[in-house]
Length: 291
Ligand SMILES: Nc1ncnc2c1ncn2[C@@H]1O[C@H](COP(=O)(O)OP(=O)(O)OP(=O)(O)O)[C@@H](O)[C@H]1O
Ligand SMILES: [Mg+2]
Image (cartoon, rainbow, N blue to C red; front, side, top):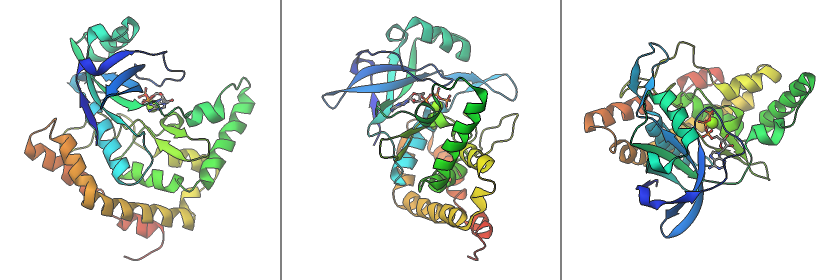
């Protein structure tokens, strides 16, 4: 379901991305199954500074990206049609990215595992709804309009439930793409399980409390949106459907990703953690339903 590629699949740089988040990111052509695909690539360092302690810890972001992608896809959420991991040498990365990576990881590595996804050519929600604002008072109105668009969108409750399940601490407006017909596509799962300092069997830790970013954003402009019956029952239905997809396909796809990185006992611990978070009881209670 995801591709694992060596450096020779890389076939050239493309123009730098128009919109970027906090991570070093590039656009490039990659050869996949004989086709040249235009992709976004995010090189990830082997270590990061733990936000709690400041000490270097293993960076699980590449695993989080892959896991989030296979889970979203097997749960029927919209994701880029092609994605995977490519190992690139430092000689294949632009100098400015290497400097950013040095700052994140503490040194320049000989090679980097990069998360890549096919460039779907859709703008993210920030680009589509919030670009070109010069007046602070206008910004608030545009934020409100975006939040109201999302409050009415059929996918919003599903995305909130997905992010609750996987403890995604980073569903900002740059991490949802919007196709022209309004369909929402999920990218960037680097911060599932709270933060990429997670270890098998336990979620990551941050000095701040993780919250559901999308839900908080919508609730800010439509107070108690997530408590409305169609939304709370929509979240419950979504979680139940994720539980069934996970048990029929998602767990197998996840194990296949995880076994590239971890020993079998660690794979089982991560699977148990994800499975354990599929409990519908809190959602059923919020929706006023008995199980
Ligand atoms: N497959 C894709 N198709 C289209 N655009 C993409 C794709 N992947 C990434 N992008 C664009 O690149 C931007 C940055 O990518 P991404 O969100 O993965 O990086 P990030 O730096 O980890 O973000 P964050 O600041 O949320 O942590 C996205 O907001 C989006 O506009
Ligand atoms: Mg992002």
